[in-house]
Image (cartoon, rainbow over all chains, first blue to last red; front, side, top):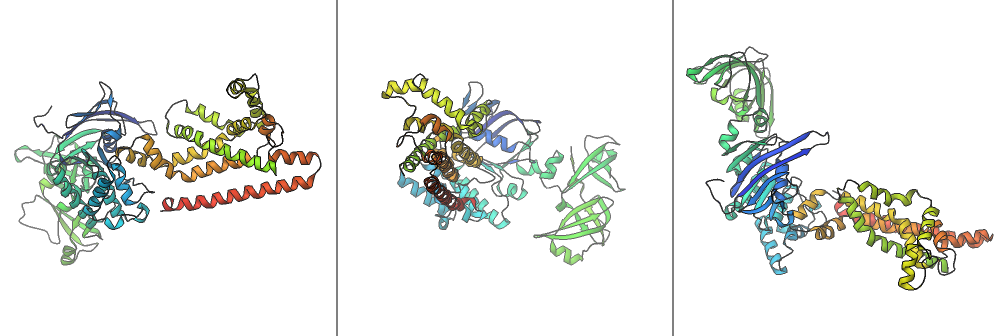
Length: 371
Length: 222
């Protein structure tokens, strides 16, 4: 299939049709290859990520296709092979974690080890409790354990079975940044030691940047791109993905004229008189395009700036300034509203408050065209 | 008090049998995707709407010396099933079936599906998942099923009368005994029996509801 032959590669070719409560059909139709290491599965909700993971784990049966790990067939529609979930050795950490509420942390972790001799179960459980720094929770039930620790125990429960593939469905949502990075470190360390294919579903850019060696993006049941995170996520092709990838500004604009020799075109933002320069796209004068700009890519000045390489300078007025965590979110009205991320220090130094007149600076290549 | 003892023995046997038989049936009803499942659900619920005399009548026909069950029983044990304690147990099991199965189905269905998925991906087969996850999490439902079938059997009258008749020490349960006393205008004796039955029923239900609350807490409370 592929030039790269890998002993423990996960391959999945899956077609599965599903109907929701309103009888609308949804088709998952993907073909992916996941080498050892962490691959991020990225996409808006409803893109088919969970269905894909369920098929790989054996919890859902594809209509058609083939799933293999290291050459072993887990599913193949042609000869009708469908290995039950319990025989696949595919570990799966659910979004809800699904810890057994009536069992202690220790019993939860030992659950997948029942085939081993008792002595070995004890040793492995003790070792992994230590690795994830949750020894003190040994006899606690999930109801008595805090969020971050529950996530650690769910990870430990999956990893202790020494799976051949690991599926993680947004396992770190709802955790604060510090706790998240601690668990991310644990996961990276474990990944470095074991090197199995890991599919990691997330919406979070931080997690993509911290963990991802590769990214596969799904949209409406199809793979729309795959590769290293920087390429895939920094130039999103589709509007839904742009939103998911953290492009806070999504603007409709009318193309005014194309300057092929410069590789740019001028557009007018809709419902305003603002004209900006964006990279050349497949468009003709008069058509409407979507422009995505990350809030952190916009510069903000309190005087009209001069002598910049940036081509787009827009005058406007601050509508609101709001501190959220360690970033400040400013809304600026330039005829259309822009969201701009700035640091609290910059807010103090420039004395930014609502009503203040400001100029926004946008580099041409920070403006991305999306479908 | 012979009739009271008989009623207790009957109710305990019926509850025990119903738990054993009801669990696989409830498991199937809770997890099967079969499209005609509703037919079996209806059959299970039938005793809820049928007059006990209808059920008792068909049970009597089946158990009689010319009925299929009666003939089988005679071939196996050398005596008939109608008007015996065994026949009474069998008819009561049928009559109390929904009281055991429905709480079990409800509690099995109440177990989070992702916990079953988690059990499967951790290598557990169906039997292990049932014993280690579904059953412990359904404990309140199991207790309810046992008690409801016990209490329902304790209070039944129509089916017993149809199938068991009124043989002292064999099929004369406490509810029939009370009826007899009332028929012979012995209200004092009827009152004593009725009061005992009332107190026992209340005590059993209280114990169960108290117990259910206690076993419920560790994981139902968040």
